[in-house]
Image 1 (cartoon, one colour):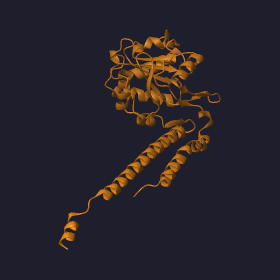
Image 2 (cartoon, rainbow, N blue to C red):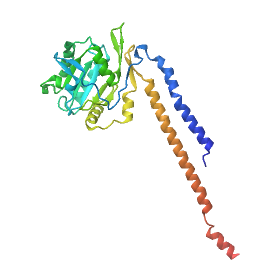
Image 3 (cartoon, rainbow, N blue to C red):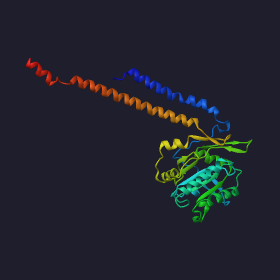
Image 4 (spheres, rainbow, N blue to C red):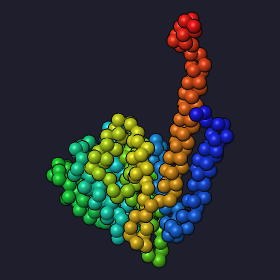
Length: 299
């Protein structure tokens, strides 16, 4: 059966309407997001370089720059956090620690981790306490001659923290009445020369996922689009302490799926139309049967 042009136009119009309606639906959902979470997002530009000249103080009270942690050989995992966060940062750093124990790569030898506080009130003593706690849970901690070469914990002033966070595409809000920050959980996989290669925005990631992302930072491969969608679908609701679905990302996924579906449907219609035309043309070209000719001769 041939597909009419009118039917095809109706299908295209229906799918297009569904796709274009997505931003409106997202706008209807957005007001449900708590006010303190407005503008809080993780939106890095992959391949961009962070400011390696940014100056910090490490857990030992020494002045350092980010460039001190990029040697051109080992990838670096960056974890923004603040050290007196009551919940999310604790959970994120614990999850990173679990992933470090699960991966086959060796901390301090194959890669490094840098955690910096975006709260200027944190001190080197706070950083040292965090460093000792998390390195003590690492199974090969005895291998470290210099803890700062394995998992560094840094502090800095507010403008420097904001500068580095903006370069990472990491945006947060300060809540004065609670003296806390509204922020998401994220870790960044950096190339050995300081470029953003990939990121995970979730507390739910496995050891194998962590290992693959780390390996890609060395090899230069890009993770699949579906992995990134899975890593960026959720954000924390600071009122409940639970993760909620991020409407913008979900709408983007649905819109992309609808666009793919549109191309599949149109392609199938064109293929079915071509097959139908070929069948009709073949039937018109078919010669008269041999049996009909002999019956006429015998008569």
